[in-house]
Length: 219
Length: 214
Image 1 (cartoon, each protein chain N blue to C red):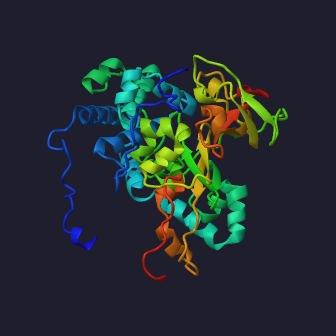
Image 2 (spheres, rainbow over the protein chains, first blue to last red):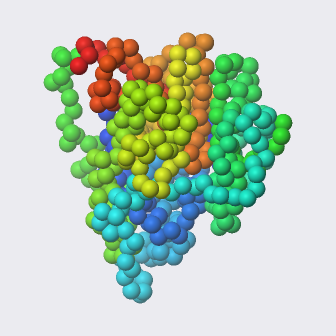
Image 3 (tube, one colour):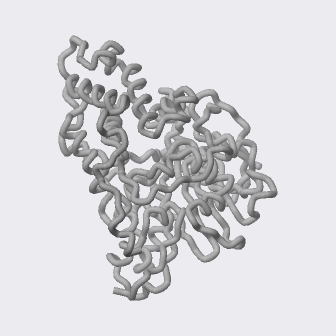
């Protein structure tokens, strides 16, 4: 979707502000949100791509004004309501209203930490051969899907060179919408900064983007 | 520097902590509800927060960098199969993230961003800092990387090529910074102490040590 989350190349957000000796969490609730998201993911009711898409679909004004963990918190509530894990009246009252018996969390105690160090790979084996190889000239398609995609707007229609093939990876555009993993070849494509931004960019600079085969066509 | 040492903030000084913010209250309410419903375990939640605050951080990445600086064979493995090379150090689970390490040289400087969300190699760097997740960084890192580096006090020569890596897939990027002068003969531990998180994202260089080699 052409959402406000797709920020590459936008102007007007000001300088990058660096906070010396920044704490991991700026308030206690931020850590609790981070942990709740992690633990609720163990129920496997949403994929990583659907989770990202739920954040992208926050109202644009909220997306811009919320801090990172507020976005996660709002999107988590939306996902749990959609999955039927909590009911609106429970959210309002803060008390369990669901007559079904208590569930057993999939992660207890130290299991939660074990999960942190077990990051899942999104690479899959497929039969099909990759269409492109390192060194090939490609163009990012000029497409504007209304759903989830990982093809940034600033690259669409631009030409680059395939730098590296990474095997087949789960395709976010389908996986985010319950349409399956549909793994396909993933490449790193190098774009000259001038191809993306015009002649004012430094001639030596490049932007490298990881792009799935469906995003690309021969150039 | 030393004259400023007694000027520091009290760690109890946190704005708005006397009265919990509406967000803090909503988060607390949701946490209680999820525990009451058996959807999450309170001890697991405590353990995760503690792990992020005390165990998972940029020290992991710094160890990778320090080994690459001292062991040429390791560095070669790191640059061709970072996932396996990082696993050798021993803090990755059996099912691992797909890592890519990109090397800074006198003529190439690498910078990592995620323009679409905030993907970050947290297993080797911990949770991302606020600036990495900010709209300012995500929007400008690709169109004006040299301007972003200036915001961090780093000015590159015109002749140095900037390679920006936009993390759009489940690949995570770590920058291998240049080893600073004055560290000849240093061991891995001492070198790892020099390596900052920012240098492994690409917004800083590793500063040369001020004192003599240990």
